[in-house]
Length: 257
Ligand code: 13P
Image: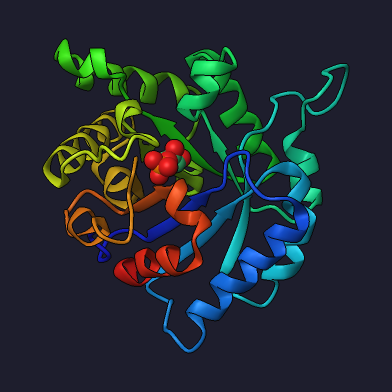
């Protein structure tokens, strides 16, 4: 983390977990863990399933926790059964949205082009975006990690202005490290977050690149967070499993704050 230039952000991605009642319990438990702690040194976000948003927004009110969603559609409204628009999220009190998570890419046909459409729609609606990029295991083994994350980043950011980059967080999530317990080493995470920062510098300028929060995600937990967050280019974390355990999530937050 380099807090001189950019904000550290810890975000939980709850994925398909927790009913609204359980969401309230978890938010309350995180609040209790953070009670009396100075969390001004980092942003705290919980990205929750759509049906939990209302309950989570109410439970988090008055606390440092902001609520995000896990996806949104690119159209404002229309015949898109099962989808949710960015405007709908804003109307529910959501501030952030994850776009392009590898599980969306792997299981739901998300492409770099649809990721770009969603990013533009989310920004237009006034949401802040957590844009996910990351390589598959075979791509790392083929030595094309830099090419893959560069391509994903460039396509996702097509049409995004330098001004709008203030509302973009990028999460580097190597697919082979997600939910596997296999974490990238701190050096690997730092290297690829640095590659992404260089791509942003090329698209915009050094000043935008310096100011962009780039998180690491993939089996980050209470034990390995300090080492990962100790790296210059790792500005926080996007946390899956460990964000569902209040004490572990609080430990990660404390390491970033
Ligand atoms: P895990 O922390 O469970 O590996 O998940 C990471 C992730 O996908 C966050 O978006």
